[in-house]
Every structure is written in structure tokens, then in C-alpha cells.
Image 1 (cartoon, rainbow, N blue to C red):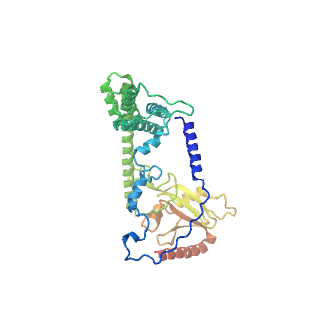
Image 2: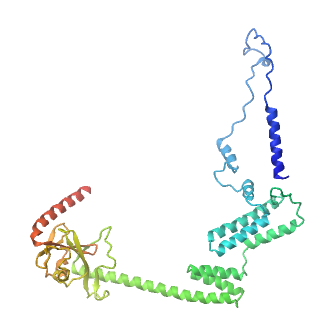
Image 3: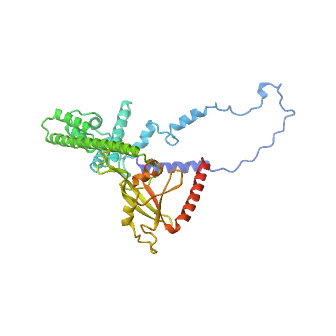
Length: 410
């Protein structure tokens, strides 16, 4: 039956129903019946008992009701694999199951060529589900799904090649779902995909399995050579990384021993500054414990809120060696900062200040643990002599307040 005929029949039936439901004029009310002389009592006969209405239906447990509702696609809270759901899915396709599955296969192939892997997987899965559902219907003895005719198109008669259609459907389903151990192309594609993600051992295994089927296959032979070259490259890189990691660990051990031997106090904070490649190291040879230590240093000018960064301050060098090229400062218009006109200080672990001589080697300042190197940076305060005394007093007061506040939080 055509869709237009179905809709016309539904409309006609609806009109007839409305005509039957049209209210008729009310009939005249009957004369009132006189009330009985006395109301029935509990002692009257059963024939005179009062009618209390129809018997109520038996009650059902709420869990049973919800379970029945969940079987209906309109009320499902969890997707359930049943025939109603499969029927709804089948409505999305207009052709026969074989045509729909073939279309899904073609779409999956196109998505695979475009490297849209998720879409290809979904299309292949839909094609398999269409054929698998059709096989379940046949196993139950039901009629196969037929193509829904378009509007204005006559319904198809029984297909004389139904058996051939079934054979093609089963052949397609078997092609998709059945492993093919002698499919050389499948081995080649699998090995190629595994090689792209550097899963060398698995790629080599897939390629070897393909060569057992076709030892002279030129594509597989070329891929095997490519896998061997990539395996050698990956192995060389792995060894280089391992050697680099071992060297880094060795240098860290040597550096820690050199710092401990000199009695230098070091501390790290949760948020160290970004200094790029600047760090504490041994120079000129980081693997030689007899080399000299080199520290990054930060010159702070607190009265003018300026800084200068020294990337390598050797332990044998003095502050005067670096101030000679740092001064004069471009922002010092009054000329207050000169090699002989400033006082330099470093902070102690207790929050105090230690005056640093301009001609004293850095190792003499750091050795013994009187000064703490925080986050691998030596911080040096540079203040003009004229304002040094007042700044020292204010600095100590501020540090005392900060340390008291920190102790209160504990």
C-alpha cells in the first residue's frame, strides 16, 4: 500500500470517529424513584449488599514497571539490544540490507583513504550490524527486510533472486568479519601502519607473516628493508638517549660532590625562576671534579629597582672583575654607581646581610655555609655608599616582619 493511501485511510477513519463521538441531545430525565423506607443494614441478605465498584487491578512492583518501560525505545535509559531498536536503526536506510551494507563499506573505504580513521571504523561497524541483524531475522524464520518504496513508487514483488541475495549478503559479511590469513595486502597495510607509529617489532612480525604467504612480493620486500632501516635508527637514538641520560646523571653526581666538598649551602624553591640554560656547573670540564664551579649571579639595585644578570660567575673571580664591565649603568644619571662608590651585600640563611668585599673571590664568600644560594642563583645587593646604612636598617626590619608572619602561619 502506498504512503498516500495509508494517510488517506487514517484521515477517513479519524473523521468517522469524530462523527461517532459528536454528542447527541440529552434525553428527558426519568421520574425520581422514591427512596426505600429504610437503608440496608449489615444483617440484610447478600442480594441487598451495596455495590462498591469494579475490582481494582493487581498491584505491580515499581521495578517491574520500569523494567518493562526500558524495553521501549521511547523510554529507554540504557541502550538495550533488542528487535525494536534494530527496527528503528533500519529505518535510517532506504535500500535492501545488501545495498545498505555495501554503501557503508564504500563510505568506510573513502574515509580510510582520507585518513579519517574514526569515521571509517564507524562505517564498517554499521555495515556489519546491518548484515548481522538480517542473519538473526533469518535464523528466527522471519521474512528478510525489504526496501521501503519511495512515495509514488509501486511496491516491489517478491525478488526471484532471493537466494542469490542471501548468498551475496553472507559472502560480504564473511569477507568483513572472517580473518584471512593469506591476505598479503592486509599484512602489508598492517605492517605499514605499525611502522608509522614506530611499533617496530609488531611491524616486522606482520611483514614476516606476509612474506611467508608470498616470499617474492616486491612491496613486502621493500617494506621489510624499510623496517630494518627504521629499526636501526630507533635503536641508535635509544642508545644515544641512554648515554645522554647516564652522562647527565654522572655530571649531577660530580657537581653535588664538588658543592659538598666546598661546604656551599644550596636551596631550591617550589617556583624557581626561568634562566634558560644558565645553571651551576663545573668549568671547563663538567666531568672533571677538579674543575671550578661557576654560578649564575643577579645584581640587585634595590634603591632604583633595577637588576643585572651575570650568566657565569666563576668561584675564583671577584666582584670587582664583573663590576668593571657592568659600570657605568645606563640608567644612572647621577653617577652614583661606581666601583668604589657602592657597598655590596649577600643575604644569610637567617635573613641577615653579609657585606661582600669587592676583591674577595666568590668561593671565599660562599664556603662555610654563611651564605645560601637559592635556586642556583647568587643574589648580590648593590647600594650606593651614601644610602647604604639606611637601606640596611629598613631591609632588616622588613625581613623581620616577613619571618614573623611566616612563623605565625605555621
